[in-house]
Image 1 (spheres, rainbow, N blue to C red):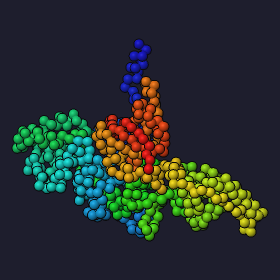
Image 2 (image 1 turned 45 degrees about the horizontal axis):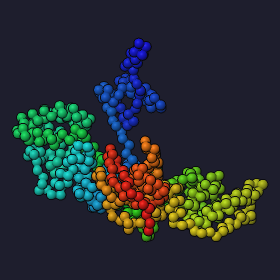
Image 3 (image 1 turned 90 degrees about the horizontal axis):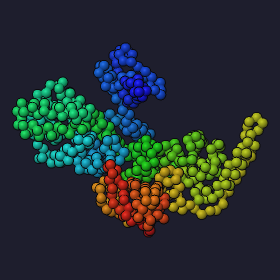
Image 4 (image 1 turned 45 degrees about the vertical axis):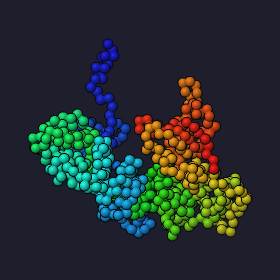
Length: 570
């Protein structure tokens, strides 16, 4: 009884209050005269108490202003291009028939592009070989649940105009630009008006049903549309065929303006990548700098494009990624902010001192000029191991002498204090202490790679798998490729162990989930108890392995079931 009484009191109350992050409400009069307002639960922004549907029912205009990271990337790329080449690119007025851009898309070089990247879209672009911005707009619109099934037909007709047909001659005026393929919500609306006798208001209701993805509403429209087609001269068979062409848009259809807006930004990103590749990839790296996996992919793409990616440098790096001009070809330099255990504060001190007094001439010169509380063992080791001090010395020797270097830093600080006279002037006659480094073995390539992985999050100067390239040179063996393959395909992959997670089964047997990476991508490898028993000593980070197994798709997420594992040897 008490529970029911409490439930009745709660009935009808608002359970919680959430905010539509991108929704902005516009009113011709002050909003508080039209709808109730409040502060958002955890902030100072003013929000409506009505939800988005009620707000529209009140006659108010609601816009969704979506933030698109690629706009920032484009802005940065334009800025970098002007700084490095002197060319100011006006994105609003770039030619929309740039040959280099379309050739790049036809080759499938889509990494870092807005709306056009990803294996599925890339595959279709290579088949399509786009030649106009209308092709890009159409691909943006069609690559959605539902309309995606029309893409093969669109590609076929684009490449062979003899295959272009129209279910009804009246559709030619509507679908000429899309080779007879229904592509946009606008196409469906015009077909409804011209072939089914819909009014513009009725066609707009049809658009809303498509735009809001309301299958039930689309089903209700079915009989009305088919009846309209028949009344306006179609046979019942053709009317039903036309409905089957329209039906996919109930899942997800784009209107033409939306597709053209996205298509324009997609083209602009492709234009910048094709014509200003170093500047564009620098902007992409900067935008993705917080995601190590994405940075690793972009570094690999840059290498494929012939753009060298250099380690951080106290003499060249800024905080973020930087274009380095070179007669042999422009390069991209890692920023100091990317180094773990260094920190932005001391990075900024290093950059400002270099701008003020010029490049650091030697290791001792660097240590003398950077007097900061964060110049300590941790930060010096981080800079040394990542190659940021390579111009000033050899990594192995600097690390071997680290304790002496730290003593030198302390002595140098004392020396500066002792040089200051009673009136605050520095006595320049007192020389700084000498820095003498003992001889040591140079750092090995193996050590450098491990340090880069540890402190930058990726291998930069090479890859542990480089020496095994001949064993896995076929594209079919790459992890990136097998992720596109069907369930149950058996093959051999090679990779380096990144992480290992061991669990115990219900039968109290150990099994493991191992993240394996190659030069193209990474994948989770499932090692069941039987295989685990034979290979548990191999499942350690940084070990290079060859794994025979089977591709497994679960909820469209690929993994690899290991059947046999062995260590890779040269």
